[in-house]
Image (cartoon, rainbow, N blue to C red; front, side, top):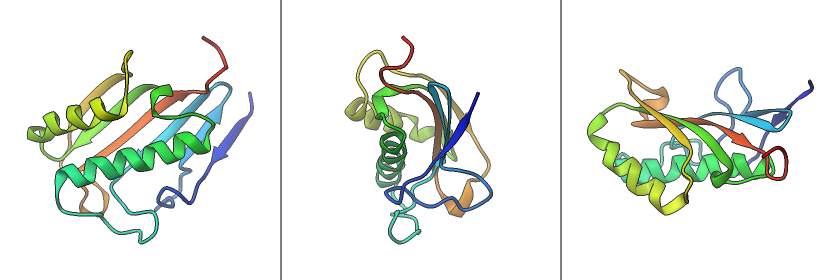
Length: 131
């Protein structure tokens, strides 16, 4: 099965040896997005709500580059420096996703790249492929 790297300048460039996403068949494996501004490459804010919004903007941009959108995600993994912010994740997702919501896991982590408070990675099913 072939695999294709997905890239967009509407999300931050990879800051390591990875692709923003990889398409394999009808699935797109989305690399973790942190709250970096695509234009500056810097954290958007120290505020968690601003950070989760930017993470979802970045994730949406990569989904769009792969031919879909956030609502085509079937699985998300959320990494948080502080689980007390979990309710903010739910609030942000309620604004961006509709039912059926993707499967999701959340993890408390000791640290994230660039001092981010949140990172999200996921798996997207390409629209119009297999149901």
